[in-house]
Amino acid sequence: MPDDTATAQAPASGDGAAANPLRAGLPEDRITTPCSIVFFGASGDLFKRMLLPAIYSMHLGGRLPADFALVGFARTAYSDDQFRDYCRKQLEQFMPDDSKPQGPVWDDFARRISYITADFNDTRHFVALKDRLEQNDRDFGTGGNHLFYLSTPPSVFPEIIKHLKNAGLEKSEQGWTRIVVEKPFGTDLASARKLQQAIEAVFPENEIYRIDHYLGKEPVQDIIALRFANTIFEPIWNRNYVQNVQITSAESLGVEERGGYYDHAGALRDMIQNHVINLLALVAMEAPISSDADDIRGEKYKVLSAIQPPTHADVFSMSARGQYGPGMIDGRPVKGYRQEQDVAPDSNTETFAALRLYVENWRWAGVPFFLRSGKRLPRKLAEIAVTFKPIPHRFYGESTDQIEPNVLVIKIEPDEGISMRFEAKVPGPAEHIRSVFMDFSYGSGFGVVSPPAYERLIGDAMLGDQTLFTRWDAVERAWEIVTPILEVWQNTKDFSFPNYAAGSQGPDGAKKLFPDWRHV
Figure: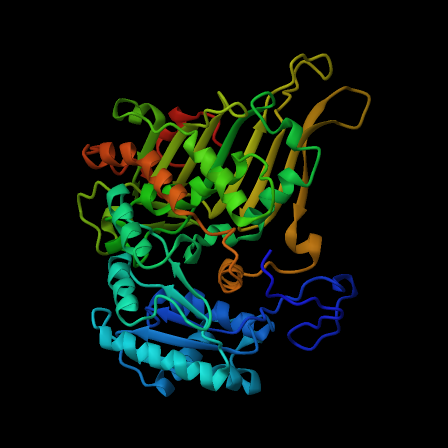
């Protein structure tokens, strides 16, 4: 574990509430190492909706270091005061009512904010950034530690990295330098490798933090605890007992205002290649020898290495794609994908993708992993369902009863928790068997609300903990797995599009791929 946390004998909450005695002796939440955080693309949507609220929430909760500063770096013209005012307005819009920017807490946060109006192609603006960071060291004691967060379109990543080096910002003589890279990491295998070459020419792997916000969600983090902190699961977590694994990421929303981006991406690139495959790796990995970041990430890479990408000839037997047409969501009519803003009227882009993959190793040989992600499905849902094999011999229960396989469901969103389906006898003289559910909810189980994923991930980057960030070899392997599918889909016009109605369970091809999909 990183060594820049202190031991708390009686930690207090950020709002001054009494300390929780159960936390006595545990590490403090506060990050003690000072630093400056630079957000490239600070006038963009991701910054105002996700990153800025995450940073301010960490400040409210007392988790940021006492000595920190925030620098915005973007093309939009702002002075420091104008950017501070912009940040306040965004926080008023996107923070909960009890966390609005006000009073001394906001005043302290605001004075640490500065801004540089910049052209990403001009080294002079990066030299100005270097001067600002040195000023932060003097004014706020940030110690020469720099966290660069690239919340810009990936197309400008190489330019930013090149000019960071030209300005002498690729390393700090006094402290550390780390760079956070948002997804998508490339648009295909070739572009991902090209981007990696640009980054690794300036930053070593231990300074590169490829962020996938799914990995910061509490139930995703708990997959490792569920498997390796409980003796009841690990002995049956294998081909002898598991019938299949279903990983689902579904949305009821359409592309909204992202039609221009999405029509060049699609569900396979946007969700499967990163979020969903990362979940597969966590579910299927072997026990690491320690909790060290590289030990965990090494086991995840081994899983992906054991997945054989489909050949071009096998693509249509191992995958299914779809595009939503008009339909009903929550009782109201919605338009089809091809009618969305900035979407081509004859678009061949999939809004639904499903794959059947196999992990060809001793533990998982023969067990299918079904992955699916889609838009305009009945509801928002992200979950991992592990279905166990049926009983080998039936001798109990009425002959008309259907005995269902046991299913363990890790619920990622919207309801964070774990559910277990098992069979039980119905009370009464007859021997009827029915499925029942045992549910655990993070909110009620621990009496706390899980922090948003970006808070955890930004904090880990500041701490230098890469456990929840994706290593390059895993990124490359994920692209290798989906590349044959991507190539076939791009080069084959699907004349059935649109092939599922908004609000339905998806295209018929997915049902043929796996008839027993759990309903969204």
